[in-house]
Structure formats: C-alpha cells, structure tokens
Image (cartoon, rainbow, N blue to C red; front, side):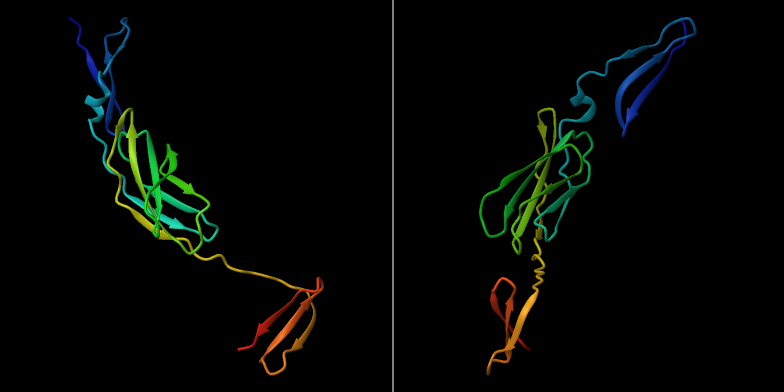
Length: 167
C-alpha cells in the first residue's frame, strides 16, 4: 500500500478540511470535516465592546472579533429611559448608530452569532453624545448700546432684533 501524507488546512486555527496526498499518478481528495459544531465548538464567546459618540449624533460601537462568529447584533438604550432597541446587524467589527440626541448618555451591547448559535450579550459600553457646537454668523446692519443694560441691541438686514450681553 502506498504511503499517504495528511495535510490539515486551517484558517484562524480552525480546521476546515483534510487533504490526503497520494503518490504521483493518483488524484488527491478532500475529506469532509463533518459537523461544524464539532470543529468550531458549541458556544461563542462574548465580544469585548467599546463605544464613542460624536457631536453629529452618531456613536461608533466597536468590538473585538469572536472566533467562529459570522455576524453580530447590536442593541442600545438611552440612559434616561428603560428598554432596549436593536441598532442593527454587522458582519464586521463595528457599527455606526445614527440620530442620537445631543447631551444624552447611551449604552450599547453586542452579541456574536453563527448559524443558529448566539453568544451572551457583552458587558455594556456607555458614552454620552457631546453638545453640538453652536456657530452663527450675522451680518449686522445696526448696533446700539442698550441704555442702562450693559449690552447691545443688534439688528440684521432682515430686521431681526436681538441682544448681546457684555461681560
């Protein structure tokens, strides 16, 4: 009988297939591995999550990849309210959550998924949406000192009248 060399092919440490090499003149074959749960395990680890928010009302939720996971589900909640909402699903290791309210805190958590198998949710990662920087520019048509008030009355070209207090 001819001698056979067995080569195991793997990606990220997971055995995907076994290639049996046979002597010249014969053709190699690939043997099926079997049930993926036997190869990948029957549980998924919890992702480690971080979240950071920007003043445009967007938070980026990021996590470390979980071996064997094919997708991730992200949930969020406001710090001043009960209940969670689904933020979406991601195949990668981050998700942007949009339309968040300025000056409000949010908590995010993530779970890993693979073919009917889900991990426990991660520990929550909290962040607060910073305030939007208010920038206004007015073409001043007139400016007059307010009598006895220590400020100014400002009128623009659209006849808007407002006031500015001096400090």
